[in-house]
Length: 116
Image (cartoon, rainbow, N blue to C red; front, side, top):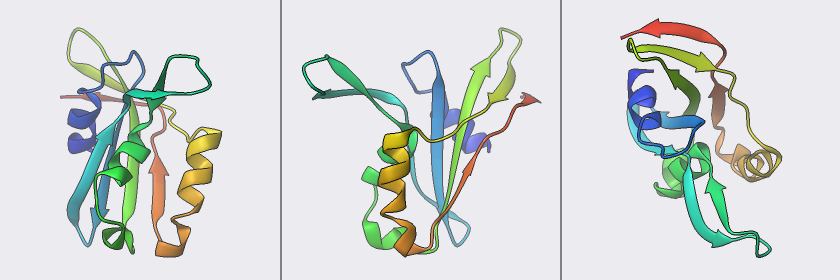
């Protein structure tokens, strides 16, 4: 979880999400939500979500049997981290469904407070 928090902190967005992909106990990929330069229907910059960013950064064959952890953080000035509800948007759900053939398991954060 600490690695996912560190990754989420890299996000330039207000809602900071981080993702860590683990296979056989080893971290094989990570990602965070950021801005994408792709234009969607002429509406300007879009958001690249953490789980998709992480998957895009690793070879597909490494996903077989992997676990994907996605967290949302809110950091207070006293270094208290609150995890928020994180859940996939409709587009991410569709994209992640394509990877079910690899036997991946996906976990999203629930609200809790962590002192680091």
